[in-house]
Image (cartoon, rainbow over all chains, first blue to last red; front, top):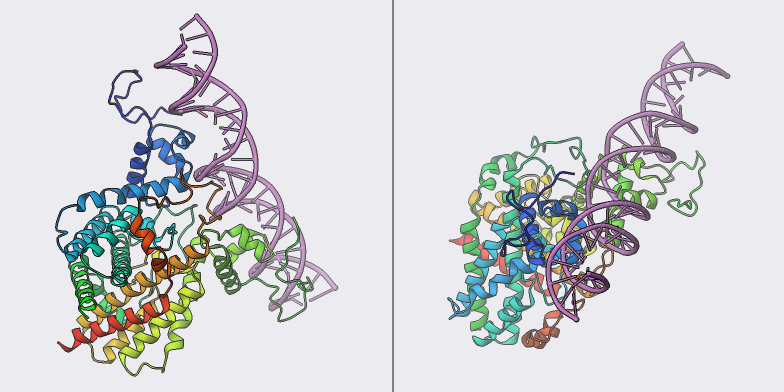
Length: 244
Length: 244
DNA sequence: ATCGATCTGTTTACGGCGTAAACATGGGGG
DNA sequence: CCCCCATGTTTACGCCGTAAACAGATCGAT
C-alpha cells in the first residue's frame, strides 16, 4: 500500500511542533466535513476518511466511537460557531435576532449543501430539538432571547416552531435544487454500484405540457431573494400574532 | 435457514390460481413499504426484503434494477394514488384543491413516517420537481389546476414554491418529532452495529435552564392543529398576493 | 408427446462497508 | 534503563449490493 501522508513534506520528525502530524478529534471532524462537501454524506466512509488523513480507518476509533458519533460531531461543529457569531449584534430586537440567525443557518446550508440534509433530517435527540436547530445552546439562546424581548411562553414556542419549519423547508429545497441543477444525472456515488434506475433514464415529459411550459420558470434559482421574502413574511406574521 | 413463506398457508402447488405465490414488481414494492414502515428506510435491505417475501435477494432483481430503483418505485407508489383521490372533489376553488392536496400528502407522511424522509430528501430528478411533490403527474396537475382557476404564471410558481416549502418543513418536522418521542434512545437499527454515540448517552440539560422550563411545552404534539393553522396562513398569504 | 426457448428463482462470488479485538511500536516518566 | 501507555495497524467477522452462471419449471410450436 502506498504511503499517503497528509502532506507531501510531512516527515516523521518528532519535532515540528505545531504540525498537524498527529490525529485529533477536531482534525478528523474537519476532514469529515471536507469529505462530505466533496462526496456527500453517503460518500463519507471510515476507510476513505482514514485515507484522506493518511491513516488506517481503525485509527479514527481512538477519537470517535463510530460513524454515528462522527456525523453527530460534524453537525455540532457546523452549528458550533453560530451562537458566538450572533452575540451583541443586531439582536437589539427579536426580529433582528431571528434575521441574523436565519442568515447564519442559511450560510451553513449553502456552504455545505452535502451536510445540510444531515442537520435537517437526522433523528433529533429530543422532541424539543427541532432541526435545523440541532444544538442545545442554540435553542437555549433562541428561547432566552425571545423571552428577554418580552414574548410570552406561548409566543416563544410559536415562533420556535414557525421559524424551524420555515428554515427546514426553504433551505432543504434550496440545497436540493442546487444539487439537482449541478448534477442532472443520478448522482454517480450511490451506495453499491447500481446502474440507471429504471427503464426511463430520462424523465418523459411528453404528456406534461404544462410542466414543459413552466420548465424554465421553475428552473430559475431565485433562492436568495425568495429566502428574504419568506423570512420577512414570517416575521410579519409573528409580529401580528404578538400584537393581538 | 428456516423456510419463511409469505404466508403460513403458502404451499408450493403449481395450481392455487389467484394466490400471491408469484413475485411481481408491485408485490415487491408493497413489501418494501411495509418493511420501511417497520424498520425505516435505512433498514430496508435487499436480502431482508427477499426473506420477507420468502425468496432469495437476487430474485428481486428480475423486477427491479437495484435498490435505488426500488426506493424510487416506493416513492412513486406512495404518491401514485394522490391525484386520483383528488379528482372532482373540493377542487371547485384552488384553495380547496390545495387544502385537499396538502391533507393527502400529510396522510402519506403520518401513515409512513419512515418513508417520508425518502420522499422529502432524495435527490430530485429535476429542478422543477420539488419535494415532497416528487411526481410528474402531480406537479402537472398542480400547475394545470391553478392556471385553470385564473392565476397568472408568476402566481402559480409562487404558490408552487410556497406550498412545497410549507409541506416539506412542517411534515418533516412532524414525522421527526413523532419518531423522537416514540424512541428517545438512539434508534437501534443503525447501519453497522455501533454503540452509544458519545461520552454523553443522555443529553446534559444542566446548563440549559430555559429549555428545561420549556421542556414539556415543546414536547407537546399539536401537529394536527398546527398544520391546519399554517396551511390556512399560507392560503391567506396566497390570496393576498393574488388580490394585489 | 417432444423439444427448445423463455421466464423465474438460486447459487456462488466479489468488493466494500463498519467495527471488535489483538497486536505492534515508539516516546516519556519512574 | 525499562516498562507502560498512547497511538496507530492488522486481522477478521458479518453485513451489504449486485454481477454472473446456473437450474428448473412452463409453454408454444411442432
